[in-house]
Amino acid sequence: MLGEGILKGLAETAKNFAGSFVSKERMTTVEYPEERLPLPEASRNFPFLVYDGSDWQAGLRCVACQICEKECPPKCIYIEKSKDKKPDYVGKLQIYPTKFDIDISVCMSCQICVEVCPFEAIKMNNEFELATDNRFGGLLLDRKELAKSNEYYHQIHPTEAAEVDARLAAEKAKAEAKAKAAADAAAAKAAGAPATPTPVAKPSEGERKS
Amino acid sequence: MIDRLDQIFVLLKHWLVGYLPGEWQAAAGVVVSVVVIIGLYPALFALTTVLERKGVGRIQNRLGPNRVGPYGILQPMADGIKSLTKEDIVPRSADAVVHFLAPIVLVVTVFMGFAVLPMGRNMVLVDMDAGLLFYFAMGASTELSVFMAGWSSRNKYSLLGAMRAVAQMISYEVALLLSSVVVVMAAGSLSLVKIVEAQNHYTWGLPHWYIFTPWGLAGFLMYAIAATAETNRSPFDLPEGESELVAGYHTEYSGFKFALFFLGEYVAMFSISGLGSTLFLGGWSAPLAFLTWVPSWIWFFGKLLVSMCVFIWLRGTLPRLRQDQLMNFAWKFVLPMCLLNLFVVALWRFIGDGWLRWLVCSAILVLAYVGIGWEGMSRKRLGARSYRYAD
Image (tube, rainbow over all chains, first blue to last red; front, side):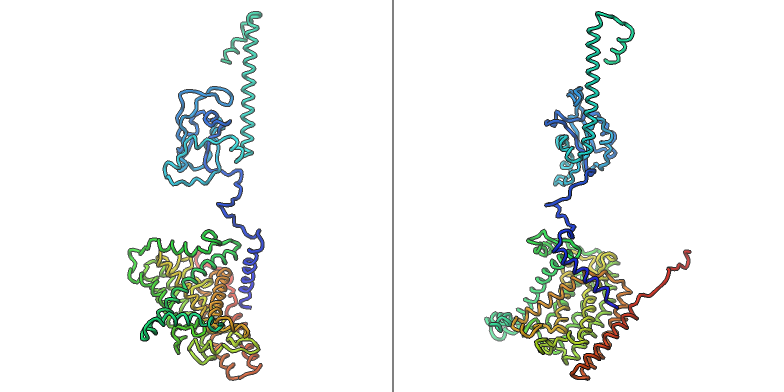
């Protein structure tokens, strides 16, 4: 009969209206500034620089190789190299960036800088509340603002950070083993050279090392 | 004491006017009443907007506005300040004078309707003998303002919205009038005060409201449908269908002029619900005999708010009609039912008291409802779509 559907619909909306006061699971609203949903682990927004340890300047992994600067499609990264060197995580002396700026108003969150970085120094942040009242300076992040600790990285992307740490540890172990082997060889050479001179093979190995 | 409370607004007005010299009192009394009406209904409008947003939100399992004030009840204040401080844009090619006049005409004509509505015992601004006629004359002029707005904006969406509005409002104006005529036939008067008094009797504690008769119920349903269409409310909100026409006839309005349109629409809803409750729901009379001690104005405004809630409920439930469905419904269902209802109310009168008239009148109306509903509104089977050229 005419009007049946309307009555059914009215009953349905009345049920929803009353139900919204009774059952909490009906309400899908998350009242954003006060409460928020956890971000998915894969979420990303703009890049940041990872540092190890507690001092951001000493622990910065970036060696100012400028690969990311060159690869960045919208060219939002600006790097200035240092004149002096500081030891990196392996202990090798490296140059470091005296200036590392990312203009996040230009950045398109493509993650290419992260993919090309050989030093696991730049990663994607998931912070999205970046609104500022300063239109130009506010969105140009310098290296101090970009520097985030490795613990923070573990916090936002735990799986990825664990992988990165394992890789870095493996590399460090390899480098240490190599250094040890080199040291052993050098010691053996130093100890063995006066006793048994074998002139053919050893020098070439020594040359390769140096 | 109870009588004093019932007449509190009348007494207050007399007390206020009593400070003036005798020859000014009548005019001052009218001014006071008008000011109260003009202040009261926008306040109710503010309340209704927040009620509507919260209500529709709850229907959709949302919270609705809850940022301004406790539970968001101060939201209308924020909206009002926002619309007052917004830029008032008049399109360069618009007819500036008509563009300016349209919202004013709307609000003025809408408020004129309240002049004849009795809002409580002895609470009517003008007790006109032809009050209902005056009301409908004023209600019909809102169409003029809608078309003024659509035409003067010089925007195709505005004009389309206005054309739809005029087509819709004129179609349903007929149904609105015909569904009200039954009450005039039963009460024997066009005066709204007399119509309320005719319903203000009780038998076994139950009121003699016209909705409790077969023809009254049918008339009320037709009136409710026509009133929803008259005020451009969902599901009849085609004139401002935002998914098709941006905002219909008020597309080119911004700032306070837009707010006036919004106000006009809601005040028209109050006014038409007020008229509906006056005609069919006994106006300011109490729903049960033992409740007659409650002040009459509480009943009137209670009925008004209940009908606003029904409007909101309908809006939360029904999707928008299509233009042809709208017109078919008006001319093929509502109008025949209204015409039949005129016959039924005459029959009711001449059969006289007794159970026979209940039986005959109900039977005619139910059969007509089923018959016209089935015949006129059944879905036409159109078959698979065929194309003339593209095959």
